[in-house]
Image: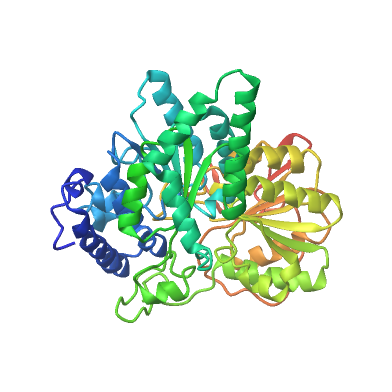
Length: 529
């Protein structure tokens, strides 16, 4: 941001004219491309919300107004505009700034968000807190993606917001669909109409006028409400769900139309109660390769910004086989011989190396979205009806399905194979993503057998053993986001449950790396050496 390096806070941004903000957006986009190309990080999501970020900080009085970015993959422009440009070189490095919003890092980060779908619940809490203290002028904004909106927590929060009616704005950042050109003009007209100051004054006046207990007036008020719902529900096909929850819906709107966004936010500030603005954005906007394949450019590592060619790093120069590679290839082989095997994954299909199996066996791989709780109980249902689900979840996300793991799977001794990816320290994503707790919280669960592979060969054989029918209950296999040092063979070997491998003996302690290092059965835990 060479021309706008004087923007050290949103207050500096607000001193600019609206016409000059386009240059700010261009500079932000160039800065992000330069930085991520050289240092890595989350990429396409941040490129897609630059205009939205600028408009939000231009209109709303952050940090007094509360702004929450769901997940935080898209929060880089927010960090750059809130005084962290000079420190951005340290993004995702030890001792540097976090790749996600962090309350410890900045007063502009209203809530820490490393896991998805928490923003609406948190902003409802903040809005209720402001109402409790009588702070009616403070604004509360949550930006949530269309993927994060699929989680149960988001639906629970929407339901509560519709009931409590706090003063809040939800921005649905939708980067997976386009505006229908046939109805775009009508939708734009309805947006202008429903956010217009005079329209809302008239609506409030009619509501007060017809709020009498007089039966005739009550009938008139009910008729007006029904007419409004018919118009909005019939002509704006996306609005039905949110309007049914008593949350006012506005949109869709072009999330890259900066002037339009600013105008809308200025109007929405003066409309009380819960509101949702549906913004259509383009993930990866401004960088052609990311537009072609936004999924692969979510967090691409370092690359040549002029060609889009990804660069090798010291960690992947030798192209070693990863645990994820072994998992994906082995599960396909096992599924070909075992018709009971089903793969279940909550929105991490490529990260968990299940994309290839999805192509080969589309009816046997289920990506259930960002719904870890559902993923576990869905797997329990599959198992209860005789199938053998391999439920693949990152360690840090399995925390979100703890009750389902205990109540729905373990207590009923259902045969679900939990493949716990990203176990241990995962690196630059930081504490919200480290698989640091799975050993602790799994050891106390009854009827569950746990295992951890020593190498790729053991991992392959663990997966084979888990589906052999030896164990009549759940198994948890935890493995890291790493490359192995060995090359697994093509043969399978059935391993003995409860048997480990001693690597080194010490004077006071035994140091063991084993493919099966703990076993839990019938509410008792047996340590194996």
